[in-house]
Length: 76
Image 1 (cartoon, rainbow, N blue to C red):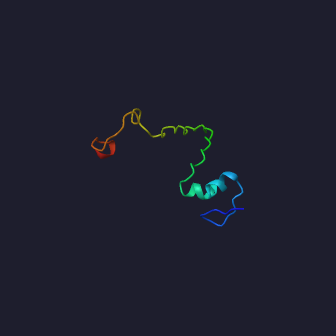
Image 2: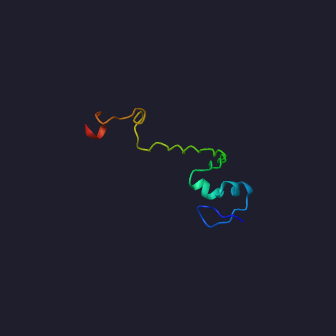
Image 3: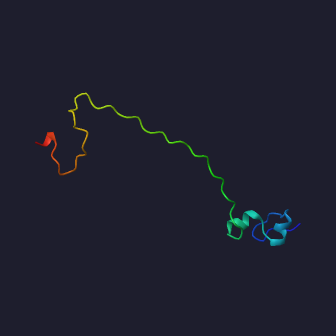
Protein backbone atom coordinates (compact mmCIF):
# COMPACT_ATOMS: atom_id res chain seq x y z
CA UNK A 1 0.00 0.00 0.00
CA UNK A 2 1.38 3.40 -0.96
CA UNK A 3 1.42 6.50 1.20
CA UNK A 4 0.69 10.10 0.34
CA UNK A 5 3.79 12.10 -0.56
CA UNK A 6 2.58 15.05 1.54
CA UNK A 7 1.42 13.21 4.68
CA UNK A 8 1.70 9.72 6.19
CA UNK A 9 -1.83 8.62 5.26
CA UNK A 10 -2.24 5.43 3.24
CA UNK A 11 -3.74 5.76 -0.24
CA UNK A 12 -6.62 3.33 -0.82
CA UNK A 13 -8.10 4.80 -3.99
CA UNK A 14 -6.42 3.63 -7.24
CA UNK A 15 -6.66 7.18 -8.66
CA UNK A 16 -4.91 8.58 -5.57
CA UNK A 17 -2.23 5.89 -5.81
CA UNK A 18 -1.61 6.85 -9.45
CA UNK A 19 -1.29 10.57 -8.52
CA UNK A 20 0.81 9.91 -5.43
CA UNK A 21 -1.32 12.04 -3.07
CA UNK A 22 -4.80 11.86 -1.62
CA UNK A 23 -7.85 14.03 -2.24
CA UNK A 24 -7.47 16.01 1.00
CA UNK A 25 -3.84 16.93 0.39
CA UNK A 26 -4.53 17.62 -3.29
CA UNK A 27 -7.40 20.00 -2.49
CA UNK A 28 -5.38 21.79 0.21
CA UNK A 29 -2.53 22.45 -2.23
CA UNK A 30 -4.78 23.39 -5.16
CA UNK A 31 -3.82 20.34 -7.22
CA UNK A 32 -7.39 19.00 -7.31
CA UNK A 33 -10.42 21.11 -8.16
CA UNK A 34 -12.62 21.83 -5.11
CA UNK A 35 -15.94 20.04 -4.85
CA UNK A 36 -18.88 22.08 -6.16
CA UNK A 37 -21.02 23.49 -3.39
CA UNK A 38 -24.66 22.61 -3.21
CA UNK A 39 -27.07 25.50 -3.56
CA UNK A 40 -28.93 26.30 -0.38
CA UNK A 41 -32.70 26.63 -0.63
CA UNK A 42 -33.91 30.22 -0.71
CA UNK A 43 -35.32 31.44 2.58
CA UNK A 44 -38.16 33.93 2.24
CA UNK A 45 -37.29 37.29 3.78
CA UNK A 46 -39.85 38.71 6.15
CA UNK A 47 -40.68 42.39 5.91
CA UNK A 48 -40.52 44.38 9.15
CA UNK A 49 -43.79 45.29 10.75
CA UNK A 50 -45.08 48.77 10.08
CA UNK A 51 -44.91 51.15 13.02
CA UNK A 52 -48.02 53.22 13.66
CA UNK A 53 -47.49 56.97 13.96
CA UNK A 54 -47.10 58.45 17.40
CA UNK A 55 -50.34 59.69 18.93
CA UNK A 56 -48.98 63.26 19.25
CA UNK A 57 -47.69 63.45 15.65
CA UNK A 58 -49.03 66.24 13.46
CA UNK A 59 -50.68 65.30 10.16
CA UNK A 60 -48.21 65.47 7.28
CA UNK A 61 -45.20 65.50 9.60
CA UNK A 62 -43.92 62.12 8.40
CA UNK A 63 -44.66 62.54 4.68
CA UNK A 64 -41.47 64.37 3.67
CA UNK A 65 -37.94 63.46 4.58
CA UNK A 66 -36.12 66.09 6.58
CA UNK A 67 -32.65 67.06 5.44
CA UNK A 68 -29.99 68.53 7.68
CA UNK A 69 -30.63 72.07 6.39
CA UNK A 70 -34.43 72.05 6.68
CA UNK A 71 -35.89 73.61 9.81
CA UNK A 72 -38.04 71.56 12.11
CA UNK A 73 -40.78 72.74 14.42
CA UNK A 74 -38.39 72.46 17.36
CA UNK A 75 -35.75 74.70 15.77
CA UNK A 76 -38.08 77.62 14.94
